[in-house]
Amino acid sequence: MSNNLIIAIDGPAGSGKSTTAKLLAQKLGFLYIDTGAMYRAITFLALRHSIIGNSDKIIKLAEKCEIQVGFVNGETKIIVNGEDLTGKIRSLEVNKNVSNVSKIEGLRKILIKKQREMGKKGVGVVMEGRDITTVVFPDADVKIYLTAFIDERAKRRAKEFLDTGTAISINEIKKNLEQRDIIDSSRETSPLKKADDALEVDTSNVTIDEQVNIILNEVKKAADEKGIKLNINN
Ligand code: DC
Image (cartoon, rainbow, N blue to C red; front, side):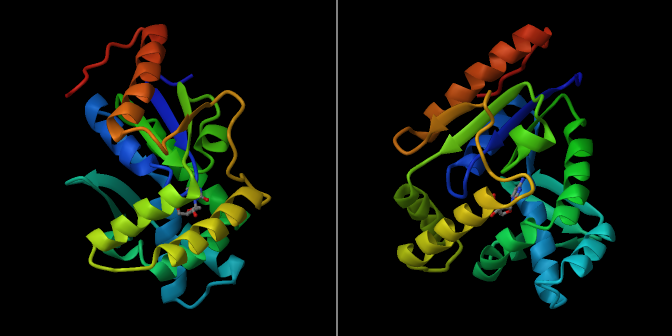
């Protein structure tokens, strides 16, 4: 068992993982790691090199990538081989291809290894993705599975796009989310699913503060059990 606290959060796109995980990490002073950003960065590079569909080349590309994921000024910052890809990984093109790239077993092996190394750093870590509670850290101190109705998830993603100045129809977003849900949860290697011992939190009808507090209570219990003193910021 690790000396630090590991909080693992999984769930489908738009379920509120990032918002919740960021706030939680800020309150706890823990590292926040958005593993989706890693799959997105590799997808962006695969598109740039026109190697989408070629698993061997994508694995070779990932082997050569030195990936740094951080959290600066309220957003995930991702730097690959010294190049800042932060503003490039959330495009519609990346959205359309990322689930298929994420199916590649050899790529997952590489990224999971990096994620496990990152999880050991700092006093604690909040890591979110699709297989954190099931594969990356099945023994995490707190395991959460976030869900929300598809219409609510599409609405949230549409707002995110609008905030960055891109107007996309809710229907188009909904279609992309549904396609990603199917691919992410039916793939052979580490599919998206709720771990038996994860706490399921439906975020459709709760406020962000409420969902953060539900998880915070779980973290407090886990910290007590490990004899770790938390310094919670407001
Ligand atoms: O959380 P997100 O929407 O940024 O993730 C983008 C894609 O990355 C998602 O559709 C599936 C993949 N992913 C994954 O397979 N495993 C993870 N741990 C995180 C993301």
